[in-house]
Image 1 (cartoon, rainbow over the protein chains, first blue to last red):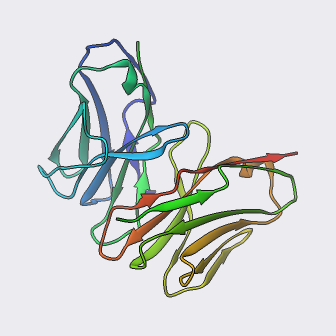
Image 2 (cartoon, helix red, strand yellow):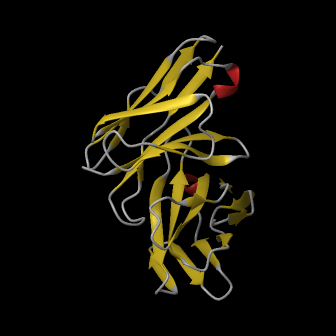
Length: 113
Length: 112
């Protein structure tokens, strides 16, 4: 069974902390994505990557950065966490080409206090 | 760019009834339309999809229809059960793009 694994289901961090959210996929997918999900706002794309060491800004990159040193791993970094970054974070991956095989992780619920 | 609108935002039905969720899209070049189900505390999971060369696709109690002329596609769930309660997202992929545009989601509540 193919998987996208997010290392933490729940995370509580303090304001100003540097936070790392990890995502690993075992499908040899080229593309990986980070979203945040908030009530009433749906899924908003933060960053995506189409290859190792490549990254592209999504719709809401401010306050975030990413790292992709290996094909299977895509990390989301909150340089200095703030309370408005409290949210559900979803990682996804997909093969090259379009659409089919787009797979989500189970999400990380981050609370910044 | 593509814009996807999804309605309704909340849908409440009795067990055994049918449920229909509709999405409209703006880019006529969009050609792949998946639907995702997200249960509480979990990530979205693909439940059915349709490509633009097909008008309808069924999988047991769920079906998706596509009207390319009107640029809308719909999810149909028949004989709803309490375990169908979840948030459902539609998405559209524009021709050549590997980045989906998602609808904002529909919270489906099935009352026993």
